[in-house]
Image 1 (cartoon, rainbow, N blue to C red):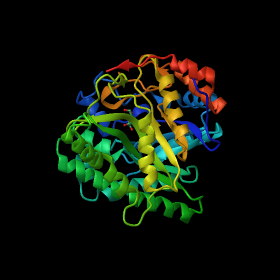
Image 2: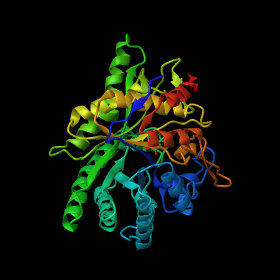
Image 3: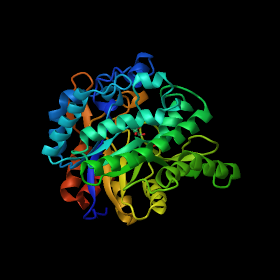
Image 4: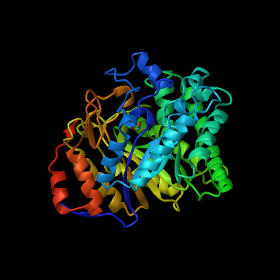
Length: 417
Ligand code: BGC
């Protein structure tokens, strides 16, 4: 088993999203979705992991593990509970959280939009309503003016393709539509949100005399392969799916007409898709996680290469990578293999934010799919560091993976589909 040494400028961190951890989201569309009975195990996002009630503990745990970079997000519904009415109290709470993180030596990457909307916005048609971009920008402006002295890095929107496909095509996410034209429109509108937010954040920072911010969006990319490489339809479907799902977005969001619109290339990578039509699929017999997603470490490099080809001068941040492993039985191996692939690629990857820190409210799956380095007990709210969490802390301390650690990781077993 091979030891790995991370490059000097490479740092490990953790990622999360407000609705998945904070609790207190009654004004959001995900609370409404929960009330409609749409969450598998009926977990309540209004509680989530009660991160807000465990701020000190979660921050201390993070610091003890050596984490120096944390990606977390705003809950728009709390920041602007009614259209045009912003909450100073919420802003202060976010400031306190960032201050606490910084006192613990942790720098933040702040996500401005991660799937959830205020109900007032959702009722008006969400990002399909006219003036949606302006509503989003008003929230961004309020947040950046109020927080920018403490924040140097931003993600404008998280995974516009997942948001569009799950909410407007698959119907699993709110608002539960199945309308391909709407899905395409949503991706276009969010592109405008990203590009305009990019400019706005830079303008505000310059106006206030704050350091130049680093801004990007979190692109969800999958590795694509035809189900059968000898089947022409599979090959064609593969190209079309990849183009519609990610290639087009990456180009228009990052390059636009007058780009680049980013200081870093954000990648959320989880799995490979095998196409036999315009949908998702998995090759037979491959290693899979507890949600049936293929574990395919080379895919993270394939996706990085595609982003890198667009803007080779920019650093790559892995804004999310992780796996649903409910019994923590293969996460160390997953970590080892993905970080080995990244390190050996020679690509300019400077950050890796593991998804996620404490097991969280996994959208439709509730707490039935566990991605955390820390175990969460939904009854007692107790946090317990997992084996993989200890492994992660060692990776940070060693700035790499020793031979002994690699051996431990390789001893773990995947399931096969
Ligand atoms: C999302 C996260 C989610 C993770 C695992 C990503 O698509 O950004 O919010 O929890 O995948 O499913």
